[in-house]
Amino acid sequence: MDMNSLILSPLYLSLQLALVTTTTLILLTAPLAYLLVHARFPGKSFFEALLNLPLALPPTVIGFYLLILMGPEGAAGRTWEAVTGSPLLFTFTGITLASMVYSLPFALQPMKAAFEKIDRRLLESAYVLGLTPMSAFVKVVLPNSLHGLAASAILVFLHTLGAFGVLLIVGGSIPGETRVFSIAIYEAVQSMNYREAGILSFILLPVGFLFLLLVNRLIRR
Amino acid sequence: MGFSFNIQKPLISFNLDVSFTCENSRLLVLIGPSGAGKTMLMRLIAGLERPKTGRIVYENQIWVDMDRCVFLPPQSRCVGYVFQDYPLFPHLNIQRNVAFAAGSGTDVDHLMKDFDIWHLRHRKPQEISGGERQRCALCQTLARKPQMLLLDEPFSALDVITRRTLRSQVIGLRSKLDIPMIYVTHDINEALAIADDILPIVAGKVDRDWIQQPVEHDERGNVIPMKAARRPRLSLAY
Image (cartoon, rainbow over all chains, first blue to last red; front, side, top):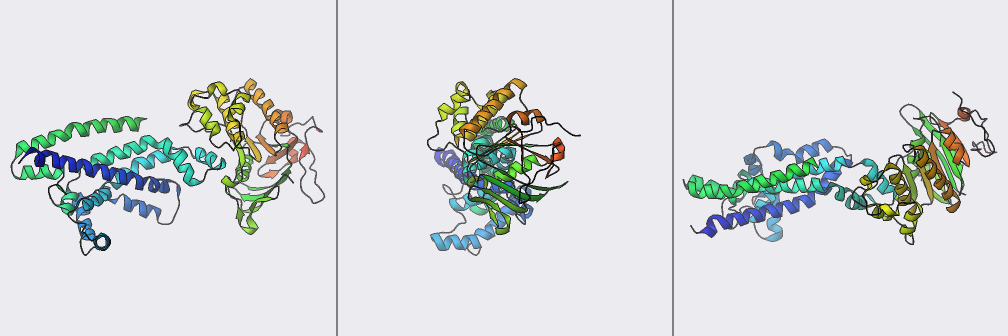
């Protein structure tokens, strides 16, 4: 195997997956987390538990349900295929969706914590000063929870880099499409190629460590 | 014209039931012991709380009419509301804080110089003193050109000298702005120093006995706020 398909292709794919997942998830969960902090509606605790379910289930269980849901007979898979003409399973889009579900609680929790920390009176004075709840969110809440957003982003990024079971079930191992770093390592180990597995693993070590140091600094602020 | 308030709201330990009016350019002081419902009253005017029944009308604008399910949100009332330990926006410097909701044509720089905070314009709220922060809060509120000013113990946490300076600035505002102003305090001396009218609130009701004054009613039976200037020798009655 050459250097490109051995290291660069899975590394590039993993980074691409982590980046897309992080960006989309942060954009989607920021309003959701805000809603969970401030809105009161029936079934809220049920809804919140559902969103945090990926935290409590083994990745293979999440992967299995997603496989059913995203398959040609599943609701998500069928709709996607009807709209775009291509399947969800064993594609980059498929594993992106799967890793978004898998990392949802990791995006939600730090953001929720950051939004909860914001002084309620700050929001009230924003309203009295004429801001709608939407513009107060953009002009007051978001600028004052940047550390929470950053912590969310880093956690999701790392969690996606480390995702394995879910991605293997939903995406398989198609080089250049779904064969991400963690799967490449698994396959190297399976074929007793410890040198290859060692090189791949060693690359992730400092990345994870560095990001965690950053998260710690952000949380302490 | 001016401002009229007639609101009922059940609270945990008593029912708030207060009605009064306040004309433009008048400074009405609400006085009473802690927990009497004064702050709740201010929050009701600002639109941060919903009453159970009643009406709030300013000029010919109905802010609240619970019988007709009218409730104007705080955004639409254009009220200035400053309270004790007012939180300025921590991510903005003082100048941006003051200009945050400035109306068109407001001279923010001039306002800041007037209130002696111009030299602090590049600082963050957490880098200035309590008195400076309250001055900044007042500027932020005034920059919006409010049609009514609510001050809820705005200077209680400050030292005597700063408090006196800021109080005289508030008195100065009364003649400059042609709007109703309501000031909450539990300090009778402060009330006497600044009030046009005084309204004592105890346990959610207007209670003249609290400052040993007879209750006066107008021809419709509404309580008339007493004229502080006419009654300079008020005393507390415990």
